[in-house]
Length: 350
Image (tube, rainbow, N blue to C red):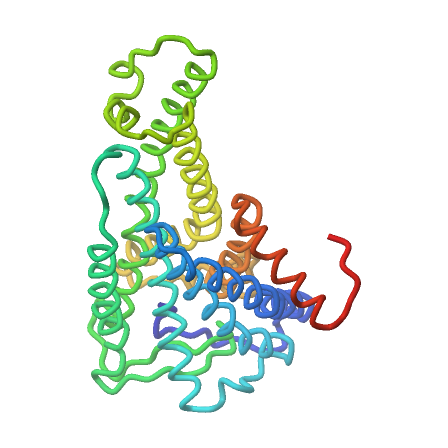
């Protein structure tokens, strides 16, 4: 999604300090993100509920993103030399896979947020994993084909030291679009933002109703469910194991976790989406992001941060969200840490 336009700028004008900082951040994403997401993937893949299925997909994608960020880190730390990107096949594979992964990631975050809002709005309606799996496979196939459009007309990915990644170059260009893949990629990245925001707002509204209902149940006050939380009236009557609102607490905690998860996503991804919107709007005038983010301006490194680092950082932080919000995940992590300590015969103090 970086497009076909590269900057023609003197390498001596790069900022070595910021390059070193960005390279260190990429390396940290590789080290900690790979470890954290591998653990998350192992944990969620052993669970059978719908949310865990979506978290499994997200953890797998995040793991791949954190692994793929290593070549960028090495290039930043070596004066923007191509290194691994100089290998023709690796550059083409990396360019295709990395940009496809970012679009897969956005889709599953959107899916997770929308399904949570749906569950809160219609608690008696069951969301089948087979339906979710079918939609996921359809999206995967469609997005895989769309991401490969750059190769259909003889295009390729080449390393750009200005963007520190392999960017798409097509052999044919129209007057308005640099490539179909470029435009489709940006639109696909931007489109899920609105459903995520809407579903998050609906989740917050319903969480307020759940909290009001739980407080009333703890005080053993009579509650008119029809006026407080209509969708849960029949659900509470049918749930024989709610233990004075325990079922509501579980749904509330799961919803809060997803809200925190989507909030982290918004911090790292919405600025990038805004840049893509700007790019699409300015295409008619022939202007691109490159003309606004030249690296002799302060915005250049911000531009590189959005394209190169925002998504890997998001992927690296996600396991910390699981660690902070999921008690079962913390217990799972401690159990495996104990096993590792026992294997190496190290003293255990936790």
